[in-house]
Image (cartoon, rainbow, N blue to C red; front, side, top):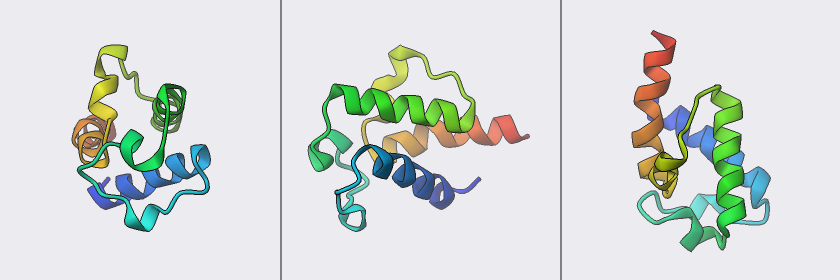
Length: 85
């Protein structure tokens, strides 16, 4: 999986949770909560969506690593590529 493929997938999950947002203007280095007016429950939905889609365990201690697009890709990409190997 490439970073671009993962980014598209993350946007798909985000758009299910916050469908009225402008994802074309999403800044990869700014937290989702700041850009998308998401609360803690929305962020939990993002984590659960990622866990469901990729069948990966994401420990609660790692949730802060899923705060922005860059940090989410940085966290998930190695795990997904290791899982595929």
